[in-house]
Amino acid sequence: MKALEGVRILDMTHVQSGPTCTQLLAWFGADVIKVERPGVGDATRGQLRDIPDVDSLYFTMLNHNKRSITLNTKSDKGKEIFSKLIETCDVLAENFAPGALDRMGFSWERIQEINPRIVYASVKGFGPGPYADCKVYENVAQCTGGSASTTGFDDGPPLVTGAQIGDSGTGLNLALGIVTALFQREKTGRGQRVTCAMQDGVLNLCRVKLRDQQRLKHGPLKEYPQYPNGEFGDATPRSGNASGGGQPGWIVKCKGWENDDNAYTYVITQAASFPALAKAMGREEWLEDPEWSTPEARLPKLDQVFDEIEKWTMTKTKFEVMDILNPLNVPCGPILSMKELAEEPALRDTGTVVEVDHPDRGKYLTVGNPIKLSDSPAAVERSPLLGEHTDEIMRDVLGYSAEEIAAAKESGAV
Image (tube, rainbow, N blue to C red; front, top):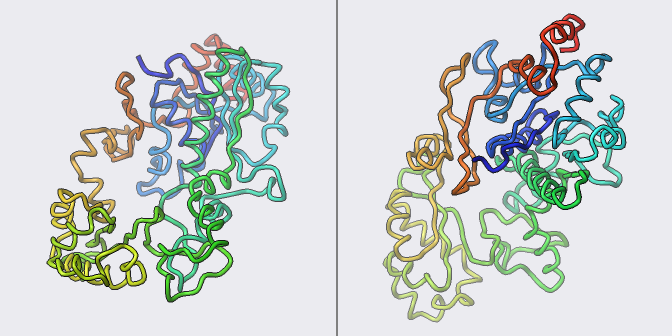
């Protein structure tokens, strides 16, 4: 049995944040009915296409295990069908601009009238406040949530990260909110609103930087590369590749870096493992030298420490460094490219990277469920074609006859 078998999701989401959420629920067995505009569908079906007239990877990789129904919610018949979907679903998920469903005539109050048990889940850009009505995209969320101001090197501009912490991160938050609300409904019998703001989600992931903002009041942040020779302002600075956990770490070059943009590794110099690291590098003399032997002595000259580490790592490949240091309990990790990750057999074996067959696109790679349950399989099935399941949803879920379905199509409602 799948964990969410029997739960039905009315998926009004599009692009990335909402589809991330509903795809995760679909992987766990929920029946996710994706509502799309007739003839158009989710905007990402046509964005960043690599094959003409075929659903883009942007769409396919965010909409696995779902069913698609096309519905014109502006028509009277479309509104009738939409109301019946609300009646039969446990969750309505959306990430429209603020007020979009209200303008359609489906406010939270109206939705509760139709189905008091439904969970109404929304992704928004911001919570209540001066930006509540502003639209947000991934990089806007990173900038307004504190990520960009604390990412990059101190002598350069703010940077956004390649990880989709605003969109996909908030989608994960919404999924947790939904299953939590469903769990509470088992006790109360009532649905409720679930709202996740992208700014909130990014700030939640930047909590260590908010921690450091408060620590600044009591002196310099000694684990940052600005210490001891740089200056600290009144806001948490950018810290390059420094570790955020108080353990000194940095990205260093490895053998082949001249021709390989990813021939690097990350090394952390924890106090407990530093003697083993020094011996592996051939710098045993550090352990007897008071200028190097203690964390306090090394802290003001971490740049020199990592310069010496880099001299050693440049004689090894990033995988050789890992093979040498891991048995010594020295935390380290090679910089893995997307090509290397796509070709890693272990990730295929665990279902983290999955090959899917699509009727128009053919075979492609996608990411699988990052959450592994021992008693709930999470097979990845292809994304639906636009409107592929319209007839079966209207027939099997909503109870329409063949004649009624044909009439709805004739009217343009579906």
